[in-house]
Image 1 (cartoon, rainbow, N blue to C red):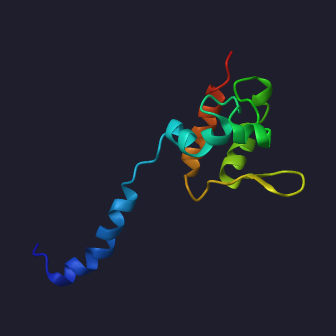
Image 2 (image 1 turned 45 degrees about the vertical axis):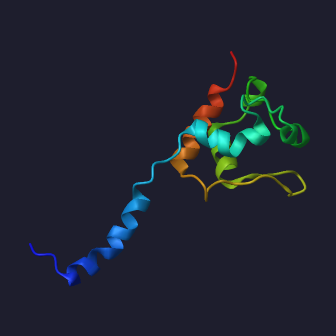
Image 3 (image 1 turned 60 degrees about the horizontal axis):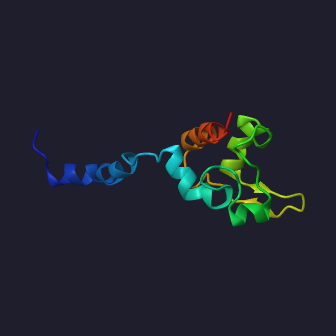
Length: 114
């Protein structure tokens, strides 16, 4: 098959879009470090200054893990607000896929010290 310039131009949109489909999803620890650790602390204890100010949960304890996976997934993707409606955590649905968010929930569960 001879590739003519007309065929090449027809394939151009696919060739441009291809790299976007090849981007690998970040692993949960990378996403945690990049998006969560600033407030929740690298170890999940919530002892970072921003986390103390916001009163985040200590995910290293059973009490801090008292939420469902569905609640955690919604918080990661949609963010959270306090009782007054002020955002306390941004949502990350524009920065990670649902699969990445689900992996992050599993990572958060692994932070509990048993």
